[in-house]
Image 1 (cartoon, rainbow, N blue to C red):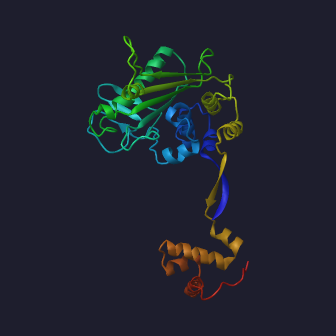
Image 2: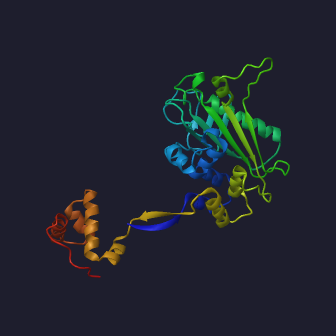
Length: 323
C-alpha cells in the first residue's frame, strides 16, 4: 500500500462544472460536510455541535437520496426508505432535489426524525408562486410520511418535522443577502396562556428556510449561512479560490490522504523481488487462492512457496534485496 493525496468530494464536485447546474448542485447537497454545515446553521438543535461530529454521528450512515427512489403514498407500506420522487394519484408528482431523514440530537429512541429537503431554484420569478411552492413541498414532506416513517398508518404524534432549505442564487437585488424563515405558528388571539412543550413542537412541524444570494453581491463573512452558499454557487470565483475559502472559513479539506494498492511492479522496485512476491503470496492466501494458482499468477515454483511458508513460520529469512 502507498499513500497519495487526492481531491476531496467537495473539490471534485466544484471542479466538475457550474454549481448552479442541477446535477452539480445535487451532488453538492449529498456531501456530508456541506449537509453538516447546513444543519448547524439552519437547525437550532445542531447549532452548538461540531461539524465533524455531525458528519460522524448523524450523516455517516444516513440514507441520502438524489432522485433515486419513488415515494407512492397511495400504495401499501414498505420497509425501504423514502425517496426523492413523491407521487400521489390525487395530488400529482413532486420531485425533491435532495432528501434525507436523521434523528435530532438528544432525542429519545424511536422519536420522530427530522426530514430534510434541499432545493436549488435558479430562476427567481413570481415570488408569491415560489413561496407557495416551498410551502406545498413541505406539506408533501409531511403528508407522504404515513406508510413510510410512521409504521403504515397515520399516527399524528409520530409525524416528523419537515425542514425545507431553498436556495435562490439569482435573487433580485432587494432580496440579496437575506435569509427568511417560514414556520407553522400558533399564537394566542384572546388570553395569554403559555404554550406547552407539545404545542411548541407542533409549531416546529413545518419549517422553511429561504436563502437569497446574488452574484457580485457577496455577503459578510460573518453571515455564515449566506457566505457558505455564496461561495458554493457563485460564478465569479474559480474552483481553487472557492476551495481556499471553504478550507479557511469552514474547515473543509481540499485534498485527503488515501491509501492506494501498489502494483506488483512498484512493490518489486521498492522492496525487491522476493519480498514483493512474499507480500503478494500472503495477500492471495488471505483471499483463499490455492498454491497452484498463486504459482501461475506470480510465475514462481512450488519450491518458492514452501520457502515462503518457512519464512512466515520463522524457520528461515529472506535473501537480501536483489534489485
